[in-house]
Length: 214
Image 1 (cartoon, one colour):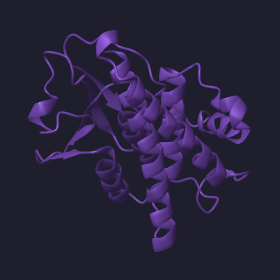
Image 2: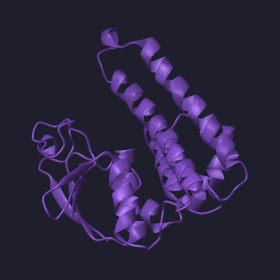
Image 3: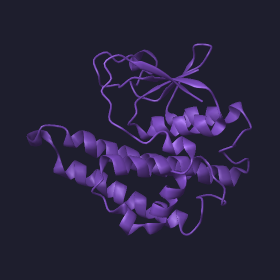
Image 4: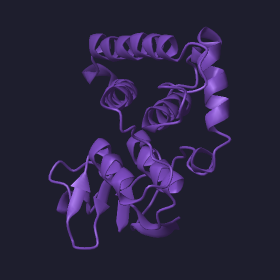
């Protein structure tokens, strides 16, 4: 298998962490979708990362699809509960974390447009989603160790990637001071190898690059 993605995407990071937790070997090709030489569109008609290329040539896209598939490959470190209600709660919180990331990314992209073309209202709307989303995430966590059933799951991976992305793109946000439980939670997550090894970083990549995930 081969994972295609960037070093800054929280959705690519989510897949990389799942691969680490599941101890699945996978090549990693760095490809940034908005560069001129990107090959992402050949594998995902939406032109987005992550993309997982399977050994039979099939491509999977959308991080939620990919991580659910990966969780079926081995019983090591099951990340989705078998109980239907718990599973839905995990997927719900994954969707919340992903939605916060989506809103944050949209605000970032709008802010990169020429000032005269930017919509202040659009940016404010996306930042409002981030703010309310964080409030709900903090309430869902409360004083628990993990988000669902006191068991580490895909919900925690998605939430951790969300917090990491906000720290990366919006270091001025005071979410750690506003939600000390989320700050402690992130500290716990960063002690895990998958999180420590995938902290977001800017990269300029002329040709796609391959590394190995294991």
